[in-house]
Image 1 (tube, rainbow, N blue to C red):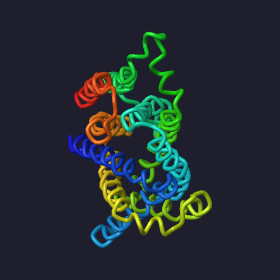
Image 2: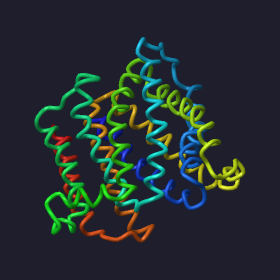
Image 3: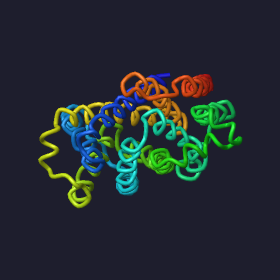
Length: 287
């Protein structure tokens, strides 16, 4: 059950990353925030190289790094855009669709498919997202989903969910061909370097904006570094679909933090959805 503990810690720090990112987007644009997420994680990750045994890189390492790194460039930018354009408690739950996509991508990429109880847990977590916007059901059975998709933030998060259903599998390949900590460092270094020119070309703000907002940006890197470390450790111990499903329960925490920190609305209906997601987590743990 050690994988379960690491997965829960991943969810906690994922939610904290959302909070710090949302706050920083009041001062910087999405391109600076996306790059900062990666580059400010490195000071907390690179020292680990002094304490871990350098792994022998397997044949699949470089391909996994190229695929995961490239796709995560788009995912990181989309993620920040979604947080900028939407409520935290509305955008983040869309990530719970990742397990549904994983039902397709995991068997194809890493040949993993969960047993019946675990499958039910994954589907229950996703079903909970329906209840996050249940008030819209009076407009039709699919209206809760349609209401989410009509808004730019949730649409972008749905794209992130699909991308992550692919990269999660390549993350596992990367971990298996190196080590959890080394893989986290490699991916973040790849992204920090690759996203720098994108930030310079696309951002409407200067680099001075980064130095002026260091206190707001550094915490994003810290919680991101911890969350990624826990995630890579967990997926090295369990099925990708299980770990990512539990990670997505960060939406439960984000709904609460969105209400208490950002005064977002509709807490009751979104907590109903969160409760259903927790039931899904229990099924996964029992499986």
